[in-house]
Image (cartoon, rainbow, N blue to C red; front, side):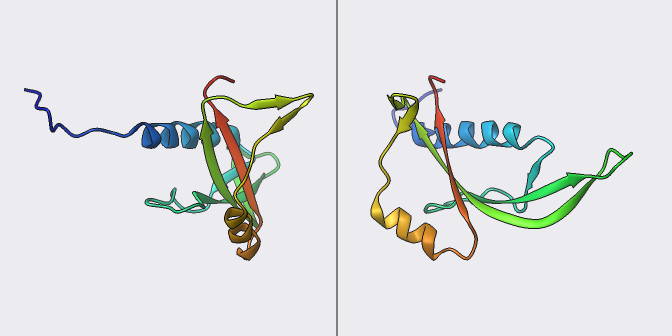
Length: 112
């Protein structure tokens, strides 16, 4: 039975989950999430570790090289020539430069 006050999963949370799944697919056999995705994050969504395949094996070796990832979901991208254009608030850039690891921002677009 549905009521007017049923629990809703906000569209922003749905987009965030989808962008995390898509990023995990991109990682494939090159990298791995060093820790589970951040819950209730305020910018940085996760930490990634580079890994290398072990020769003649199906296993991988951690390279002890890490970076932070911030995922941003959008409905459409602004294309300028051969480039993607988007703005980043100065406070985000300051946050990234303050981090003790490199930060990569990954844009996730529903239409691409």
